[in-house]
Image (cartoon, rainbow, N blue to C red; front, side, top):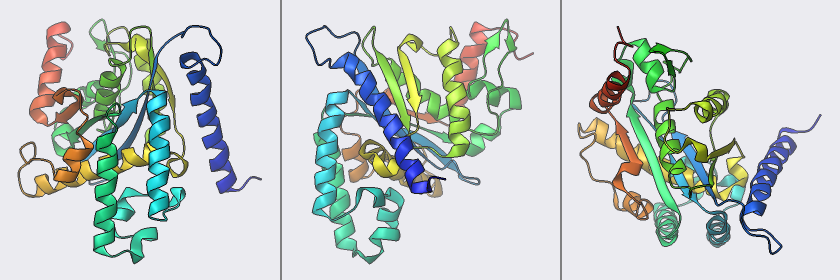
Amino acid sequence: MPSAKNQSSVRYQVERAKIDHLACFVHPRDSHPKIFAMLNAYLDESGIHDQAAVCIIGGYYAGKGQWKKFESVWRELLDKYEVPLAEFHAKDLVKGYGFFSSWDQDKVQNFQIEICRIIASQRKIHPVSAAVIVMDFMSFPEKHRRLLTGASLTNGVLSTSGCATKPYFLPFQHCMRHVACYAPKGGKAHFFLGLGKTFSEYAEPLFAQIKQSSKQVNCKERLGDIGFPSAKETPELQVADFFVHLSYKHMIEAHVNGRLGKAPPSKMLMLCMQNMRVREDFGYYDREAMQKTLDQVDSQHPGWDS
C-alpha cells in the first residue's frame, strides 16, 4: 500500500496535471488561437475550527503565466532563507512553531516582510477574501443559515440543503462569485483549495450545485473546475495561507478590542492587499450584512420565509 507521502505526491501530480491540461487551451504550443482565457484562484481558510469567533476564506487569483512567474520568485525566497517548500506553514512562521522554532524574532520579522513585498510586487496577482462573524451567523434561524450557505430556492421553497452549521461556506461563495466575474467573457475561473477534509466534502458538491443553478451566482457560466492540491507542494496555496493567516489575526485582534469592521489593517496585511481591484472583493459578513442578503432574497421571492 502506498505511503501517505506517496499518496500526497500522487494527488499533487494529478491536480498539477489538471492545471497544465487546462493551460494548453490558454497557451497552445502550436499556432492555433486560444480557445478560452483562464484564471486560477488559490484559496485557504482560517477559523473554521469549533469555537472560532470569526472564519475567513481568502487567497489570490491570476492567469497561468503570472502564477508561473510567482512560483519562481517564491522558491527563490524560500531558498534564500533555507526553508524547504514542504515546511512552510504561515501559522508556524508567525508563532515560531515547527521548522521556525529555532528562528529569532528578527529573522521571523524579516522573512514576513519579504513575503509581503513579493506579494505586493506581483501586480497582476489579485487578492480576494471574505470573513463571517460566527455568532452573528448562528443567531439566524436554520432556514436562513441554509440559504446563506448555498441552499437553492425553487418556487419559493428551499430545494437544496445548504449547510446551516458551517458558516464558512458563506465567505467561500463570496470569493467564488467575485473571482468568476473577473474571468474574461468566454473564459473560466478554476479554484484550487488548501482546505481540510471536512470543508472539501461539502465544497465540491456545493460548487457543482452552484454551477447548475440559474440564479445563485452572477457569471456562473465562467466557473470552471475545483481541485484540492497539497499545500506542502503548492507555492500558490502557501501564499494564500500567509494572507489568510494575517487576515484572521487582524480580525481576532479587532474582535477582542471591540473594533470588528473598524480597525485598519496592519502594514503587512496592507501590502498583501495592495493589488486589490475593488474594495467589494473583500467581504465582511456581520449580522447587518447577512440580513441585507436575506432581504434581497425576500424581495425576489416574496413569501418564501412564511
